[in-house]
Image (spheres, one colour):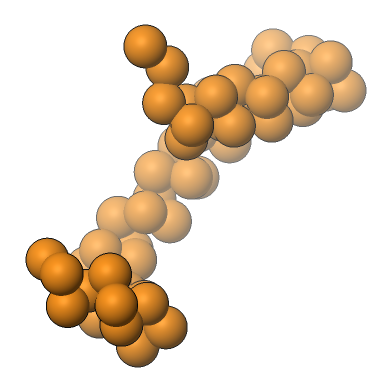
Length: 59
């Protein structure tokens, strides 16, 4: 089963490949991964809890 996040990534990659060819995929995926690692190391989840208090309290 494909999750919503994987489906949205596949949609964006499909559009970008049609515009820029296959050499665009690897840098885009690596950049997205680096951004996710940066957000996790800086504690971005705590900042998100300020906006999503109900969800954070239930965890």
